[in-house]
Image (cartoon, rainbow, N blue to C red; front, side, top):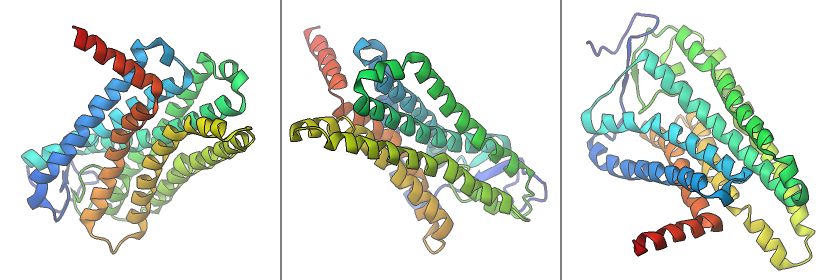
Amino acid sequence: MSHSNVTDSTNPSTIILLGIPGLEAAYVWLSIPFSIMYAIVLLGNFFILFMVKIESSLHEPMYYFLCMLAITDLVLSSSTLPKMLSIFWFNSREISFSACLAQLFFVHCFAVMESGIFMAMAFDRYVAICHPLRHCTILTSPVVSKIALAVVLRGSMIVLPYPFLVRRWHYCRTNILPHTHCDHIYMVKMACGDTSISSYYGLFVLFCGKCLDMFFIAISYFQILRAIFRLPTKEARLKTLGTCSSHLCAILAFYIPSFFSSFTQRFGQNLPLHFHVLIANMYLLVPPMLNPIIYGVRSKQIQDRLLQLFIRANRI
């Protein structure tokens, strides 16, 4: 199969992923931290799913949303990391155009879904703190299921035009993508002709998929802080605020790299290409790695259950 830089077809049969341009000599060394991080993602998120499944005290809305977050993180990281490691280890750069579109869809879809889950978790914290006596009646199992379905449908529907838009462009310049995975912005840059529709729609997805979520999260925490400052004692305020600390840390771990990556791709033309690619990969890997650590460390129920498992294992 030819690895020509130029293709005259509307859709090339394969896309050549370059990996991280400029850092080819360091691929073996780069694969070590990425492999360790991916192992933590797999172990940590499967551990969260296992703990919630076996521990009946964790069968409540916040932990159901945490399970959704764990599944989303597993899919988000697994959509890109195996291919990136195959580039590092085996120089396996080819990916079919259809597989490239599928990867593009999963990456962006589950990123939007993760943002929606954080918004749902913020709503859960708002109800738990501002309406504690009605928490069980407001966030019933059917309501949680409907919220979960809405998050999945919104993520799928808002990102669904991406592969169709990418497929309709002519790729008369090149089939070489200077990235470790198929990213929408980079696919648009590869195409020739007027691709403004894709560029504008990308901004629309960023606004509707993340900016609106951040707006509603901010409103939820504004109400939460109002309720906290009305508490009579400092100890009560700190204890109540502590119940939100895991969620706040996870939000920062997700949104800061996400927006930094988005804005550097659009406005950081003077930055080295390998910097853009590394930031994009950090955004897809660091939050899935940190989320189970954050919730495992901050959740007393998960800590207690883990301690019980260790005690039973030592007795055996």
